Image (cartoon, rainbow, N blue to C red; front, side):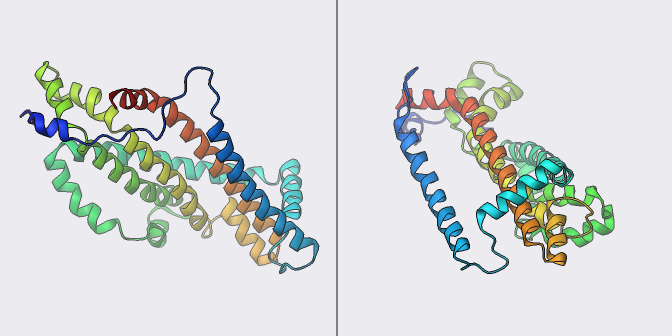
Length: 286
């Protein structure tokens, strides 16, 4: 963090991103969002309808079941209770790795963004290890942590760490120096500036990284559960492949899709609540 005040020209020329549309007044309904949502979901419904019609006409290969058959098997496994142990195991692994990797990425990313020594230490490590596919490390992690949940949680945490770290780092680096200088000039300590200025101003970038990490947690989970698992949605796919049970395979895929969609919507809701004040402030400044 620099203490020297920026020039007025630098402050005036600092670009600011305006929201795409003005915030709605209290009680006003967002018709534009409704139309956009209906259009998007109508496309999905259209694809499913064509898929189902192709199934009725016996135009699909054996491994591509029609949507209604998949839905029937999904509800059958859900009501019988056969599905929930696999969902619970996968959700525990993915969320444990997601939280662990995101918290470490958030802390180290922000510290690297405000501290040159921390940045100097982590920059070469991140640059060297970021391109490595995290699933490729799974055999090594299986040797270190065993075939239980620990190895799977660690590989998911590694995959989630990098997007949160990078977005937190660039979020801290992109904070307007005028705000930092103003806070320091009013007597705020470094920690007060960090928690009162830098961290709130970085939240938009942080949430972007967290959303990417959430998606990656399910992508890596699926691959991690293919090895050394006795339960989980990835294990269900392996079991389905061995028994040529394509219905089980699609139930596992649909389950991961539903879990990912629900958690992503929850995250977007939290983001909208947390960043609502910032968006209103940016619109007012514009």
